[in-house]
Amino acid sequence: MSQPVRFSHTQDALRSLASQVLDLARAAGATAVEVDVSEGYGQNVTVRLGELETIEHNRDKDIGVTVYFGARRGTASTSDFSPEALRDTVQAACTIARQTAEDPFAGLADPALLAGPDIADPDLFRPWDISVEEAAELALRCEAAALAVDPRIRNSEGASLSNHASQFVYANSHGFMGGYPSSHHSLGCTVIVGEGDSMQRDYWYTSARGADGMEPAEQVGRMAGERTVRRIGTRRLATGRMPVLFEAPIAAGLFGSFVNAVSGGSLYRKSSFLPDSAGTQVFAPHVTLHESPFVPLGFGSSPFDNEGVATRARDVVKAGVVQGYFLGSYSARKLGLQSTGNAGGAHNLSVSDTGQDFAGLLREMKDGLLVTDMLGHGINPVTGDYSRGAAGFRVEGGEIAYPVEEITIAGNLKNMFREIRAIGTDRLVRGSRICGSILVDGMTVAGE
Image 1 (tube, rainbow, N blue to C red):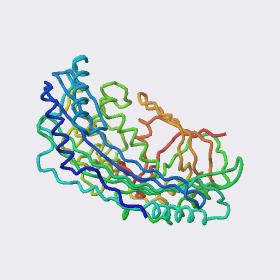
Image 2 (cartoon, rainbow, N blue to C red):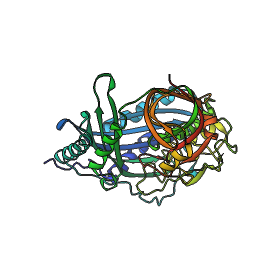
Image 3 (cartoon, rainbow, N blue to C red):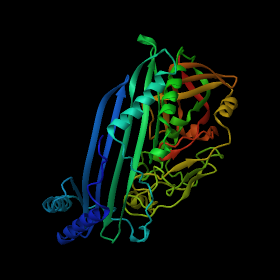
């Protein structure tokens, strides 16, 4: 049986390396410096049709250093933690900085915004010391459960189990230093029904910080099998306008487009379809979007962002009105604003619901399209125009009628946000954006 894998360095060792880099950069004349030291390890085991197919192990480490000479900035990195490599990396960053043009917006985060010295461990580390043999057994059980759903399921793309752990320390010359370990595990399965041109596939997966937060292997497999079987007998759909219900596993993508549009980089580059949107009504009045950086075991939880700025809970959207943006220090300075603690991304965005479960959303829609799979990336970030390939189910009389495929749904995100009629209670927690299924009125559906 495989032996458990552990980190190669302690947190104290990472802190010591960060301190060494800071000292080297100061000695080289840098007026400011920041460093990120990290390491991680993981394992991925894949089975297919009852046999072990692949075993992957990974272990990596990295030190990234950014130095500032006034308003000039240089960055370099290395995976070698030896003293010689640290010196060479700092020297490389300094050389780059001396050759670059000045950027008045470059620099470390405002010291007043940094997290305090008593940073609590966010408790995101639930390592899974599972051997290859045990991982393969779980994946095999998952796939077997999927294949057992229906005899027409005769093929599989396999089942995979992955477990990963990482840790880091971030430090800068303002005196900030902080870091912690975290983990992320997942189990998924994809199976195929039918033959030739009539083949259909679907999948299901579960993910969590700890193994005890994941769905059982057999449950994941059954869901994959059931979702695949219901795709049998797909049809084309006549072109027209109708309400569209985005199933929970893909609904969060709509809010991903919103996050991108109100993030600093898009705003200062003027590549957003929502410029100057703070204080304006962007969503339907029943939509609230809350950012919660301190959710236990949350995928987006963190006491500070990638620059050491303290995170905070807030309503990003309240009653449909945008309350603020997602900004790091650089983009905030470009916009004449203050960092929101979002260097590196958002922290556990939770979308309010309107009280209906999934069946209730179908009844609310009555007649329309349930989308369960999306294809392509047809979103224009500047105009908000939205056009993507899709598959799902025709809904008639508040119930699923038959599966459909080879269709395109189109609209504009600004209109779609305002026309969100309902949001379900059927939340899935798989990442840092959490919401139920979303019902949007009046989209164009192109089929036959």
